Length: 337
Image 1 (cartoon, rainbow, N blue to C red):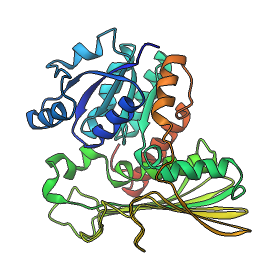
Image 2 (cartoon, rainbow, N blue to C red; image 1 turned 90 degrees about the vertical axis):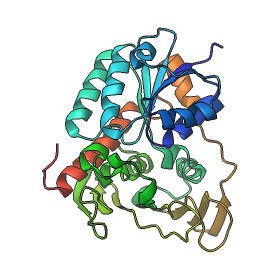
Image 3 (cartoon, rainbow, N blue to C red; image 1 turned 180 degrees about the horizontal axis):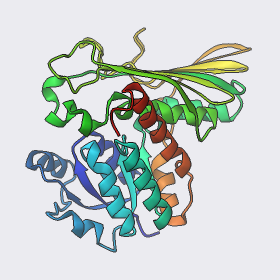
């Protein structure tokens, strides 16, 4: 079978390495990359030796032998890259957030519908977290009945001295709910088997970093469908002493049981991440998910070949970003587009 060939445009967030490895591990072929920043390009070329750096991104977009463009550019640039690539007949996989305004979302949706290309946002806290994938398998098998509630927590470590200037510019990163909570919005839709939800409330704030007025260091969302409720909390307050960038947690309540996921670390002492706790009528069970397979990469390649939607339905991909963008808009009183 001919491998899917892909190229990278924009490597401003380290998530680009997860995106690239996801595809390489699934059997795709990386054929080139474009980055304007020499330091970032050196790091990327060092990780993937022999892959050519291309000065003009149009050379990659217009290359008919390339099937897929991936990007972790500065967030406000991702929509434009995706639009150009789809119009050139390419499928696209971008880091979250896929876009930073509702108007960008509408334009991306319009072009995707016109071209029939795949636009996939790699929500890594779902698709690259083995415990979250395992929870999906358990729920699909009926382990906790019908999901009626989720509560997702996405704390992150700020590490301000390592961040580029755009990280502190609201217009560029999109706000904390767009930047981080899009993960939890996608998971709420996934676990409740919904393609839309209502935002009940949303807030953002800068609680402790007045030196960076464009930074939002905390935020939350309350959302619901007719069958389930969800709560999301995100922040930049992970302590330096935690042996992970954040204690990501997800609580899922079903009609017949509950699941708790400790995504990155178990503060009680178990090593590593991907911890899952299942409680049902028979008792409490701990499941180590460190060996659970991650299906997103192989499924996306199959979707590119077969024009299917097995990795993630296109509707849910867009709906997750629409929820995050709408919540951000509500939280800021409609002051940003």
